[in-house]
Image (tube, rainbow, N blue to C red; front, side):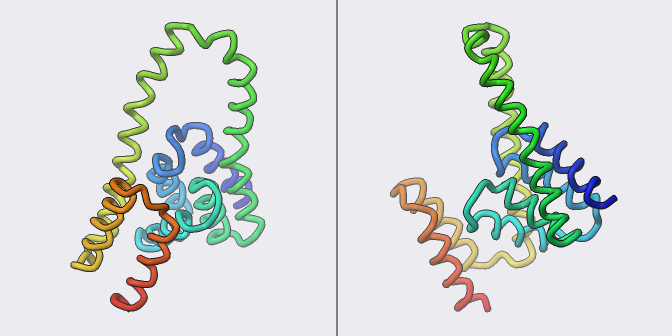
Length: 174
C-alpha cells in the first residue's frame, strides 16, 4: 500500500509541479511530510544531495524520499510517480503544440504561469533559508555570497563551487 501511496503523492507533484525541480521543492516537502518520516533538517539534506547528484532535482528528491520511506521499491514507486505525468504531458504537448502555437489563449496562459514559477522558486529559497536559521554563521553567509557572485557574475560552473563548499564545510563546520 505504501508503494501506491508514494506513486500517487509524487504523481500529483509531477502533474502540478511547474517550473522545474526548485519550484517543486515546496510540494515535495509537503509530500514527504504526509509520510511523517522526515524532518525539515533531513529534507534540507535531501535538497543538497539532489542538487549535487546527476539528474533532475525533482526526480532525485522523489527517489530519496521513496527510499527513505520504503527502500528500493519505494524509491522506484516515487520516481515513476513524479516522472510519469511529465512524460504523458510532454507527449500530449508535442502532439498539439503545432496546432495551438499562435493561439492567444495559450500565450496568455503561459504569461500567467511564468510568475507562479518565479514565486515557487522564491518559496524554495525561503524554505532553504529557514533551514539555515539555527545554524547560520559567517561561513554560511560567505558561502552564499560567494556562490551568488561566482555563478551570477563570473558564470562559474556550479560543480566546482559545490565541491569547494563541501570541503569548506567539512573543514570549518565539522
